[in-house]
Image (tube, rainbow, N blue to C red; front, side):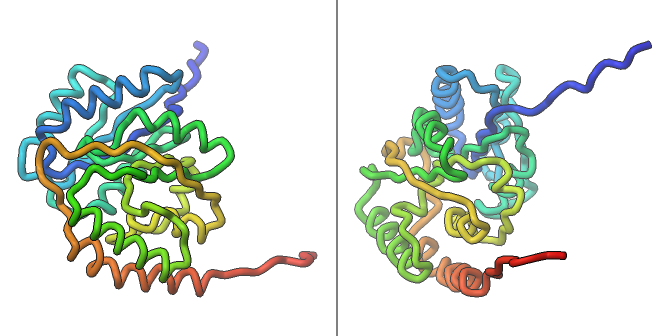
Length: 245
């Protein structure tokens, strides 16, 4: 009896969405992602990573999954942080490209195809929220944090805090992550030799729920992480082999 060939499970795109107490947004978010990607020819999956939510976010995702087989759920036993959520999502992806965005509906999924168009000549495409729809204190804290990170790390990324990004899958396989390092994805991948660019994207005002970030955790808690990233930049191995016999 002739054996059948194994089914190719590779997809074009994986969308990774960290979730923490976003129950009011999830139905609208799933609809927005579907509407955005239905305009493309991509075969895709949507991976929601529930980071120990205290509301019923996980149950809502499971309910959505019954209607949409593209949805997958990774559920943490307790809150572990956004970097851990990204790491778990990245490890589970089947797509050749990986898109990331927040679950709060402030990132617009309609911008994902725009980033995918740009990635043909790059390895990572970062969203830049050119016109922020946030409170002044949130805009101010993000601006200060971004300037400090760029100054210390000698970077030129206009919006390091924007979660809307698209990666080539192979980039993520070499990415070494620790708590808080999601803020430095572009810099970490530049250290590995990958090409990074940025594209202006839309930004919506938050309608439901509340932000998990403030000045303290945007600036002060990331300073040690920033020092670590700068150390990695300075200590990067940099050699060229002239000859090998």
